[in-house]
Length: 80
Image (cartoon, rainbow, N blue to C red):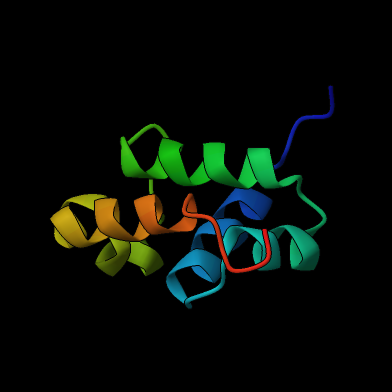
């Protein structure tokens, strides 16, 4: 299994915070959707640390909003 670089993982996080869905992030980065979910979870639980230039994206800062947004991505969309 190919390792995903830290820079690519941070790009995934940045795209997530820019409002893209997991599917859109997967398409733009070439990272599988399941890996995108895992990367966001790693960030959420503090396993993947934000670099200093992303300090405002601390998972603790977003609290409940972060959980709601993650949960909403698991909901079925019309036509799925």
